[in-house]
Length: 290
Image (tube, helix red, strand yellow):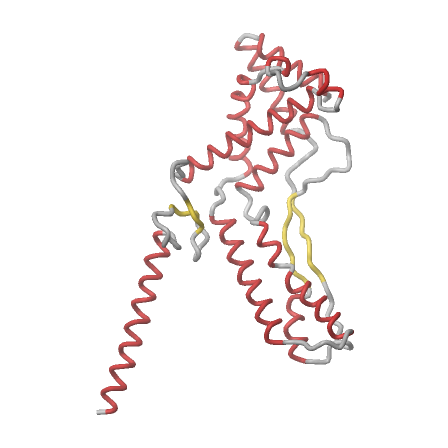
């Protein structure tokens, strides 16, 4: 499908009666879900191999060996074949599912930085050994353990706030948005203002095809974001933070807010139990002294 097909589809939709509009919407959906750009996931790895001939210290070998291969999932975002307008829109639809729904991909960027730490630390270690520099084993061990703990925290934060819906659910949500997008569409010439001219924009390489793709992408993002906020009961008039325990998005009621309601109760109970144990130990010591 080329640019003129999609622009004509939008043009005839505006002029058509109810039956014609319904036919056009069905055709668009058919092309969208039939696009070659399917939602796919695949594994990637951060790999290294511990050189036991170079690293003689058993403690260092034990620190790095368990993390020689760290896997993570990514959603396919690049395609070798040439994409048309519908394909680009489908890629956006795929990205929305990955970002808001899929629990294996699109984690916080901090997560991906954290899982690179073991490999990066190994590279630094090798350089230090070759340069005969001093090595602090405790610092290396602490840094790796801390980074992997943080990675797990960021993973929980990322997954706990995703929608628990299937691809078919996502497809139905997108289908509901499509009619609104067609209804609200305005041709490029109708949105022209004094800040730019259509002819110069097209000459610069940004044409009606780009405009339509951009319009669909921004509309889909906006509608989906509103859907997610509504599903999660999030108000745009309130401030939110991620719970430090479970990662769930929770309302920030004060500057001291650190946990969601459930985790706050659990933390309070844990504190109460620790206090009672400490008190019991102190009482037993005093009794023993007497």
